[in-house]
Length: 282
Image 1 (cartoon, rainbow, N blue to C red):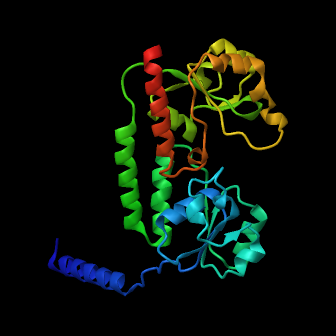
Image 2 (tube, helix red, strand yellow):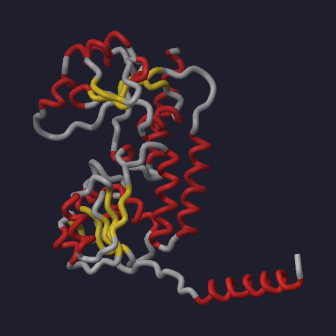
Image 3 (cartoon, rainbow, N blue to C red):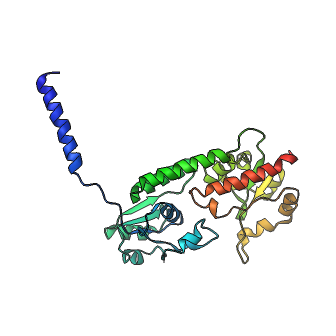
C-alpha cells in the first residue's frame, strides 16, 4: 500500500470515528403505550419506571394475563386510536392482530407503532425480549432476562427416559401441534405431543373418537369460563370423562401459556411435575 493510500485510510478512519461521535444517539421513548396482551407483559418486564404509561385492559384479567397484578398499576386502554393518541405516546406497541384500523390511524397521525407477531417458540421469546429491550432503550436488561430464561429452562428441561403422550384438548376439540409455543412447552417437559400421531402436526380439530382411540397418557384442558358455551360442551362428554377417569389429574393451561414471556417456564415446571407423577405408571 502506498504512503498516499495509507494516509488516506487513516484520515477516513478518523473521519468515520468523528462522524460516529457527532451523530446523536436515538433517545429512548418516554411515553409508551401497549395495545396487546403479550406486548403489555414484555413491556412491563423491561420498561424503566414511568416509561410505560398504559397497557391493554386484557393484561389486567387474571384468566389470561400472567402479570394481572402488576398491570393494575397502569391505566388500561381498549386499543382505540382516539384514546391512545390523547395519551401523547412517542411509541405504541401492538400485536400483528391488533385492530388494523387503529394501527393505521395512529401511523397516519405520525405515531410510531412497533408490531410484534405471536411467539411460536422459545426462540421467538428470546428474539422478542431483545427487540423490546432495544425499542425501550433497555438492551442490557433484556439480555439479562434472556440469560435468566435460558438458565431456568436448562434446569427444567427433561431429557432422557420415556416420553409419555399428552393431548392438549380445548373447546371444539381443538389441539395444538408442532410449530407452536405450547408444543415447545410440552417438549421441554419431556412429553410427546399426540397431535403429530393424530395426523395434525400443526394442530387442528381432534375428534373425541380419535382421542379415545389414541389413549394419551395425559389430557390437558384449559380452565373453564363461567356460564354455558357450546364450544366447551364437548369437554363435558361422558366418553371424555371416562377416558380422563383412568388418567392422573393434569394441570390446566393457565395464563402463563397465553404469551411468549419467561412465564411460560412456570408451565414447563407444572408439566414436568405432571410427567414425574406418571413415572410409577410407566
